[in-house]
Image (cartoon, rainbow, N blue to C red; front, side, top):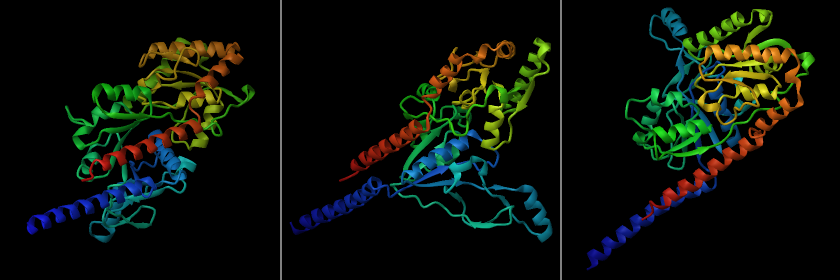
Length: 398
C-alpha cells in the first residue's frame, strides 16, 4: 500500500513540476518576455519584401517586443579566393548584411548572423556567429520561399509562422504534394487578400491572418504639376523574361505612338527610398509591369505622389485596383498596356488628368493603407498569436 502511495506522490510531483514549467512559459508570453526571430535573406540591394520584414520588426520593437533579424551570411567568393591565394590556405570571407537602403526601419534592429565560428567580412570587420538558442515561448517567422529553413525548425517546440509576401514562390520552393504542415506549421501572416485566397486554395486549413501595409506619406508626396517632367517612371521585372517584357512594352508604345517619342522613360533601379520617392514624384506617369506581385506598393506610392499609373493587374493588386484609380491592362498583355500608355499620355497632355476627382479617388484608395492601420493590424495579429499560444500551452498541462 505504501508503495502505491509513493508512486502516486511521484506522479503528482512530476505533474506539478511539468505544470510549473508550462506556467513559466505562459507567464513569459503574457509579459512579452520572449523573443521574435525573423529569418531574412541577406540582400544588400533594395528589396520590397525585405523592407516589409524590417517594417514589421520595427513596429513590434517599438511596442516593446524583443525582435532579432537572423540571417545566413553569404560568402564573397572573389574576396575569399584572393585571400586564400595570399595565405596559401582556404580562407572564407563573407558579405556583411547592411540593409542601409531600408532607412529608419532598420535603425536599432538587431541583426544576428547564424553559425558557430568567427566570421570575417569583406568590410574588414569580424563577428562571432552564434547558433540560435530558442525557447518554447519564442516565435520564429519564416518567409514563404524557404521550406529548407522551415524544416530545420521541425523539432524545435516554439511558435513557427510563415510570412507570406508572394504567392509565386510558395509552390516553386517545394516538391509536389508538400505543404507547410509537413513541417508542423499551420499559421500564416499574409500581406494581401490575393495571397490569402491563393493559400486557402492550395493549402486548405491553414490559419491565415491578414494585414495591410502602409504608404509613407511623409516620403511619398505630390509635387506641383509645374515640377513634374514629361517622363514615365518604371521598374524592370525581377527575372530576365520580365525585364524583356517591360522593354517590349516600351518599344511597342513608341511604335504605336511615334508622336510621343520625345517622352522618356526613367528606370527606378537600385535607389534609396528617398531617391526612389523623388524620382517617382517628379514623373507624370508610372508604368507598372510586375506580373507576380503579392501586393505591389508601387502603384499606391505613385498615387500618393499624384503620379498617374498605367499597369498590369497581378493577383496581389486586386484589392485596390479599379477603373477609377489607374489604367489597368490584363496581366501580361503587352499590346494592351502599350495602347493604354498612349491613351493616358494623350489625356495627360490635354489636361484631362488634372481633374480634382482623379486625385480624390487616389486618396480614397490610399485611405486603407495608413501607417496607423498597419501598426494596428500588426499588433492585433501578435496579440492574437500570444493568446492562441497560451491556449496551446494550457492544453499541455497534466
